[in-house]
Length: 273
Image 1 (cartoon, rainbow, N blue to C red):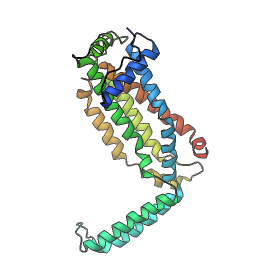
Image 2 (image 1 turned 90 degrees about the horizontal axis):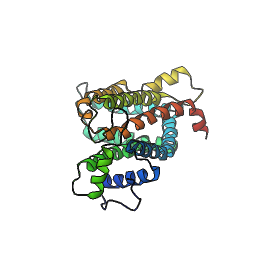
Image 3 (image 1 turned 120 degrees about the horizontal axis):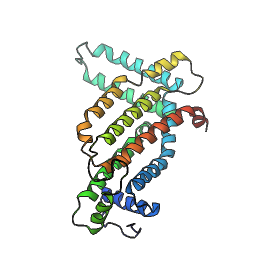
Image 4 (image 1 turned 90 degrees about the vertical axis):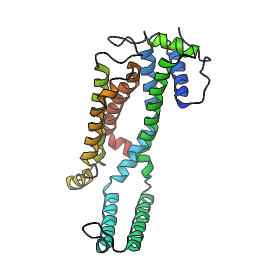
């Protein structure tokens, strides 16, 4: 049964909004297999984010440019020089007012550098603030489709989801009994973190090796390792998720990998444009 676009679930919760979008996508795709509709929703959503990704990419390249890095390094040296006399090796502060004033001047200097170079730090973290809530809402939306017992529409969708998969995951309402989907999801996300965080040290063309090595220090290895470790340790929880959740997670992670590789390859084009 294919749902008409007029058959919406009446609620204003974010997860219900995702359910309505999924139902609409399923109706537009016209396939009896829900995994195709879930894949399509993911690709459409990630494609809509590409303009924001481009803006974030350009903003990050400005931050990593040699001029901005030199300005920030000079500001850091001034700040350290100011607080060194008042902060002991044991981090004991002898003059709290002087520390406050130095920190305030540092923040003003940082904001001035960002404004002078037309850089908006918030743009460097805007994507996670969009993608994470959508993913969490998607998980709740899928679970709502599976567990709801007081809504005729969701009950009918649950029956479709039970036969809406393919290959070894025919039933999208239960966890993958072979743990293949969670392993693919974790593996693809691991690679996505590897490529994306490593690419953060990529800079504008024609930058010498010395400057590039200094900028790579900005990407602290332990940040990447921490996220990847947490990802691996979350496998017991991930393995218990319904298979339908991975119809968003896996294509989204693969999309991120392709996106990172493509943007890195054409970095000069995006910068110049």
